[in-house]
Length: 284
Length: 319
Image 1 (cartoon, each protein chain N blue to C red):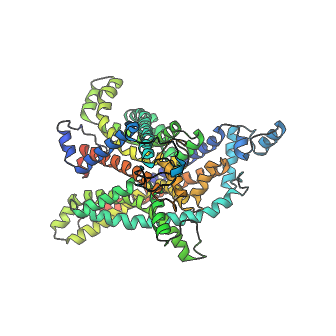
Image 2: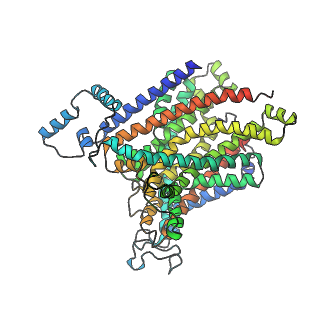
Image 3: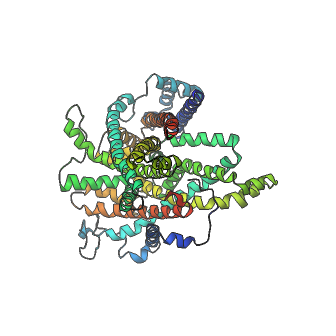
C-alpha cells in the first residue's frame, strides 16, 4: 500500500465523485457528523428523561418514532445523541494514535538504525496482544469514562499506525527529491518538515479514515462491556447491552443501535476506500 | 535459509520475553500494592501484609521475582485465582478446548466463504459478481460482531427457535448439540475474517493475473481454467497464510466478544471476567498465553510463507 508517489491534486473531486460508493460514504459521514453536532435541534425529547408510563413502547407508537427503552426514554433521541459519543471516541482515538505514531514512524523510517530496531521490537510486543483485548485491559485499568476509552483505543492503535507511518517514511526517503536534498546537505529537520511530512499527509489521511471504523467498533464494544460512557449518557454500545436483556420483550431496542453502529462504520469504510482509490487506483 | 530461520526464531523469542516482562510489570503497576492485586483483599494488618509479601516473594528485588515467576511458569505453576480459588491451569484447561473448537470452526467458515468469493470477484472483475462480493465483504467488515451475534440470536433462537442461544455442550457428550451451540458463534466470527480474506484473495489474484508468466501461459494456449486454477490455487495458499497470521490476533479478540454474547465458557469469557473482577493472576496468565500464541503463530506463518514462496517463484516458470 505504500503509495510513495506524490499524488496529483488536480481534478481530485472529479475522480472521487465518479465512484458512487465513495460519495455515499462521504454523505453518510456528513449525516452522522450533522447528527452529532445538531443533536439538540434534531431530537424531540431529552435522551435522559424517563417517562415511566411509556416503557418499552414499540416503534411508531404515540409520538415515539423508534419507540422507547426500558426506562421510557425516547429511542430516536437516544440514537441521535448517541452519535456524539461514538464520533468523539472514534475520531479522537484515531487522532491520538496518529499523533503518537507519526513522529515515531518518521524517526524510525528516516533515521533507521538503533531507533528503528527498538521501535519495531516494542511495536511487535504490543502487537502480540490482540487489539481489542489490549483496549479492554487498558480501559479496565484506567476506569470507565469517555476520555479513558479514547486513551485505551488510541494506545492500542499506535503500534499498527507506527508500522504504516514507518513504511511511508522509508519509501519516501528513497525518492529522488529527498535523496537530492540529503545529498546537497539540507538539514534533516528541514527535510522532514518541509519535504517528507507533507508528502505523507495523503497516505496518512487514508490510513486515518481506514482506522476510524476500527475505533468506532472498538468503542461500541467497550461501551457494550460497560467500560465507556456511563449511564444515563446515551451511547450505542451501552444501549445494545441493556437491549440484550429485553430481547424477548422488545427486540427493536437491539436493532436500532446496532444498525446505527453498522451504518456509521460502513460510511467511514466507504469513505476510506474512496480516498484510498484516489491515491492508489492500482488496487481497483 | 537456516540462518534466516534461526534469526526469525530468535526475534520471536526476544519478543516473547519482552512481552512477559510487560505482563509481569503490568500487574505490579496497578494502583494499590501487588499484594492487593495477587490476593484480591484490600485491607491488611501490617503483619499480614508482611506475611503475604514474604509468601509471594514480593519483598525480593524485582529481577529476582521475575526469574522466579518465569521458572514457575515453565514448570506449569500458573498460580491460583483469588476470585474462584481454583488453580489457573485448571481453569485454562477447561476453557481451552472450547475456544480451540470455536476458532477452528470459525476459520473453516472464513476459508469456505472468503476464498471462493475472492477468486470469483477477481476473475469476474468489474461485473456483477465482483460488486456483490465486494459489497458482502464491506458488510462483513462494518458490522459490529457482537451485534451480529445478537441479531442471529434474535432470528434463530427467539423468532424461529432453531438454535440455542447460549451455553456449550461438549462434542463427546452430544455431537449434534455441540455443533448447534457453536454454529452461530463460528459464523459470526468467520464472516469477519472472511471479509478480509476475500479482499486479500481478490487483490492477490488480480496482481498475479497481470504478471508476465500468466500472460505467457495464456499465449501458450493453456485453457483459462488451467491458468486460473493452478495459479489461483497457489496464490490463495500464500494469501491464506498471510491473512491467518494477521487475523489471528483479531480472531482472538473476536473470540472474547463472541463468547460473551453466546455464553460460551471459553478463554475469551475467562479473560473478560478476569478483567472485570480484577483477577490479576488470571489476567497475567491469559495475557502471557495469548501473546505467546500470537507470536508462535506469526513465526509459523512466516516459515510457511518462506516455504511456499520459492515454490511459487520456481513453479510459476512456464516450462
